[in-house]
Length: 214
Ligand code: SAH
Image (cartoon, rainbow, N blue to C red; front, side, top):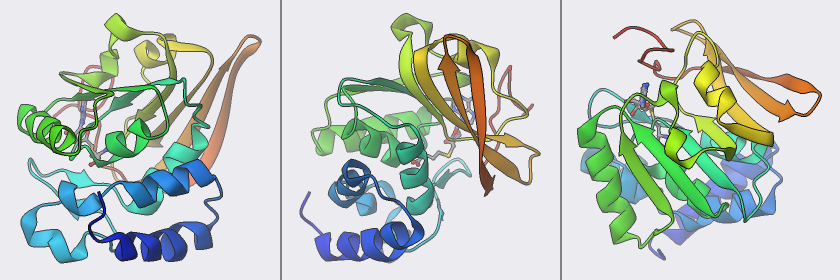
């Protein structure tokens, strides 16, 4: 994972630290994961640019800052088990795999899931499990999860996801309209759920039973 390290150092300094990402484990994970391996060949040169990029199935690989912001908000411990909804390229799951014990990631497009699995194998990332299906139902077989990252935007936090969150667990998800959303952080506490608004974001739509219609 040594290729293009200097570009990642620059990315961490200019796009992440300078914008307030402080968690050293998150910064180290962003430095470790070779984002260029997850982008399409035609975007190879732009792999460390400060932007989301197109991937197959008219989806996108998230902007590095957004991946770091979501990972930081989850306050991951090395023993945590994480559910991600929206594998996409697999880049965010790879970052999360450096911060937690196990990552379970769901993708509705078979083609994207298969490409992500191949990338994880090439990079010897062995603590990631990929499932194909509607992630708005969660992945009950491995529940409960200490943390959840939803990488596509929906009209509300799906009840099934909240229910598969452990007590003390954290969930981040963009919630709002199809065009613009707020990144919400939900904490499941013994005396109720706490919601925080982390600001305006733009994500591709979450398509599914508890998301938008296709
Ligand atoms: N985390 C990704 C970015 C994913 S973009 C990365 O780092 O590249 C959002 C992804 O969510 C898309 O691939 C889209 O197909 C997927 N998606 C949308 N609705 C979904 C659903 N209900 N279940 C699973 N995946 C979904």
